[in-house]
Image (cartoon, rainbow, N blue to C red; front, side, top):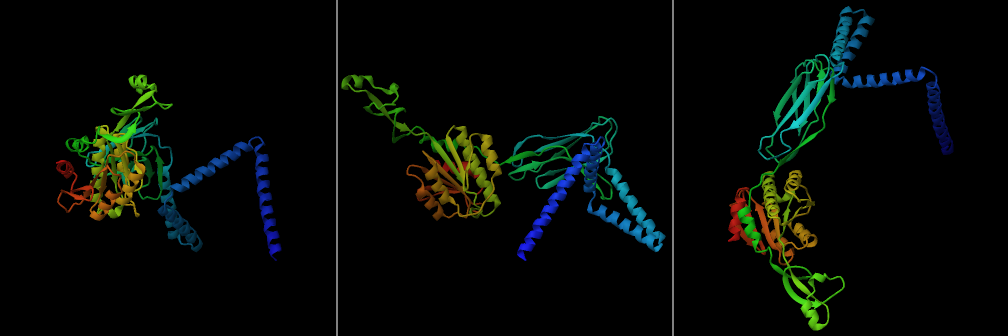
Length: 434
């Protein structure tokens, strides 16, 4: 029986393939007949146009035309004139609604943002300009566009030939975010909402709402001053602090040959130097949602990390910015703030201790590690994080707690700065310098 079923299935598949091949072959042969090719193309175009028009009809439109058709058919069958009239009226209403959407939409539409990047709370404006490109006036329509999670719409009046209409609107910037603005769509439809035709005219524009930051020029500079230029025990072949002489090894820079010692010993001697430290600041921001009491704590933490990173960039320090889950490129002010703007919280076991291990494993020659976290991170966690950092790395923690007094404490090797708002960060850093 299984063999018979397989045979029947194979036979059905073969028959289907033969039928499809036959239809394709017939179409190809017909297309070679003069005039048939054009007819086939017109038929295909009509089908596409019909499908496009059917997509304009909304649920209420389908209900209206279906109710009209049923009422007309039942009225004719039962001889009920009133029901026939109701059906005819419903169908007429649908056809009239469809007429509102027919025809071209001859627009040239542009979307402009006043600024592509603003700071939280700053004013951000966008403008839409619609121009009639037809040689005749056009009927009124509506313009719609998504702005973040919201939808903006406004009435577009009828435009004369070459007429133009501009609409300005404000974009909310109360929270850090990347806001997608657009695309702009023109919408034509009937007053009853039976039929709706929309066309997309622009691409999506992105508005970056950067976190607020504060200047730390008088504080962070003092924190890093004693690290810059300090010599280490690492020996290098090229630096400023002379250490000793040694015999020449192939590949050494001949500019560091000490000729007087070479003449005295008869062997080629070169200078060795102690490597001079250059400040390398690591800002590690926890984005684990369990490390924060609420979103406000997270926003203060992001702003604090941004402030520290911008100060390091301004002073041309080496900078590494990382989070619980990735390293953020921070080669410029704009790149740093853009990446912090995109930042969202995550879940998982990655906390301050894991970030400290990442610094110890992946960041070479770090001179200062700054851990930024929320109020739910305990002193025990910070002590454990400081214990895994490399010896010689100055450990600092910015702990955001909106219900605590701003202040300074020490947990193990970690200097902990508690801040309850961003404006407290410079003052608390200044205290830590004393």
